[in-house]
View (cartoon, rainbow, N blue to C red):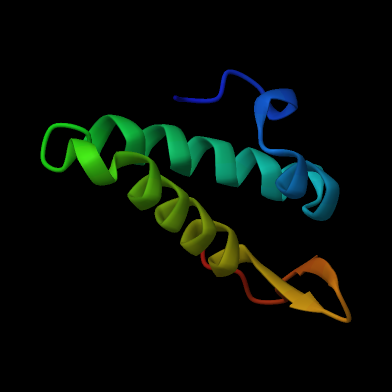
Length: 75
């Protein structure tokens, strides 16, 4: 189930990630949903969430319970 907007993301993601990180998460999730769906449909959602978190973690880090942009983000 791709997400049309950040408002459609799960509550935990909306509560904890900054807006830009939510954009990254949503874009990565939607891309992975499309890419991996045909190969392993039974794991589609799991894989899409893992890919989305990996994308966020490339640009953000968690410190003291909050997410912050990394100083030297990979672009």
